[in-house]
Structure formats: structure tokens, C-alpha cells
Length: 245
Image (cartoon, rainbow, N blue to C red):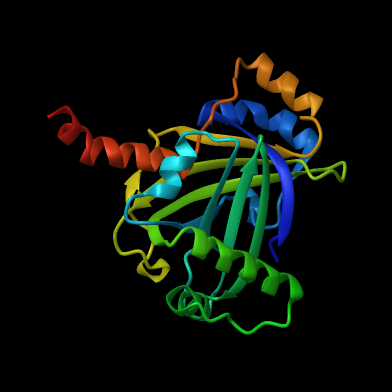
């Protein structure tokens, strides 16, 4: 089961598939593929991000305040039925440190909660606490599913037992209609072909071997939010011409 609560630093890079391939011998010296990467293959993550009519949550996020938070529903692969387990997750970032809290329920029960505010039944103390936090989020930010974002991920965990994690995301797909995870995976690409988002996630300091590897390849950290980039594109395509006029 995916981790319910965690806190860490996340640093992102935009790389090509060729660069990712060149990194692999070094990466595999220090890390192993996670359990979702069967036979070294990627797995799909599908998400529904929440916002209001004015896109207030993402508008605030792209301003890069010291504190920001987002709410999303996440599934590991496209749900096959209303009984498939999916996760509702609140993600907060303060001064560069990310905390996440999530709870998992059958898709139908979770969507019923979104529509009515009625908590799914669970004996998990942590899940109930997460739902209470999300209740507060809804009071502060009246919102609903606004954007679908999916991508293929290959993830690695540190061999030394630390919580360091490295991910490569590609084929990022977005849409703002048919916001039902059961509708399948389709939409518009967010990145050019051959580009990937590489993200190193850790507590404490960034691993020295990774810093040396990235520096040796001339890679530099970049700010990149999938939802943020989707919103920037959506705004440019739908509102820029009106503003210019």
C-alpha cells in the first residue's frame, strides 16, 4: 500500500530519454526499481486535481508562495471498476519541504464523499484524520475535480535503506473534460516527445552521488509543476488573446 503520510524535499529536472539512459548505470549502483516497476517497466499514475471556477488554487500555487497546498485523487493505473482502490491526497509545501497525507477507498465511495461530504466507512485512525483535514480544506477552498493528469513513471528506491527516491515521468497527458477516471486515459501531451521529468526526493541532504552525476551531465534543477504547466498552457490558449485585446 502506498505510504499514508510522509515529509520530504523534492527537486526536479527536465531531461531527455537519452540522458536518462546514460544515467542508469550509476543510478542502478545505488538504487533499485520499486515494486510497481515490474520487470523494469513503467507504471501509470492517473490523477484528478481539484480547483474552483476561478482556478484559485493553482493560480496561488504558480505565484510560488512560501506555503501552498493542493488536493487530488490518485490511482495507480486507470481504475477498472468503481470498486478499484484510489487515493485522495492533500499535498502541502512550505519553504521547499513537501508533506503529503492520503487515504485510500473504493472509487465509488470516494466520489460519493466528494459529492456529499459523507465519510467512507473505515476503521483506520489515520484515514479518518486525513478525511478530517480534507473536510477543512473543502471549507477553506470550495472546489471540485478540475483537471485530469496522467503519466508513465519509473521509480527507484535507495539500496542503503534511506528514504531517497528517484522518479522519471513521461507521456504526461492532460484534459479538462470527462473528469471521471473510469473514462480512460487520453488527452493532450504536456511535454515534447522525448522529454521526461526527473525528480529526486529525500530528507536531509541530496545524495552526493546524485549531485555529482547531475553536475557532470550539466543538469540543473528546474521548477516544474505538472498542474502548474497545464494551467499556464490553458490560460495562454483561452485568455491571453482576450487580455491582449
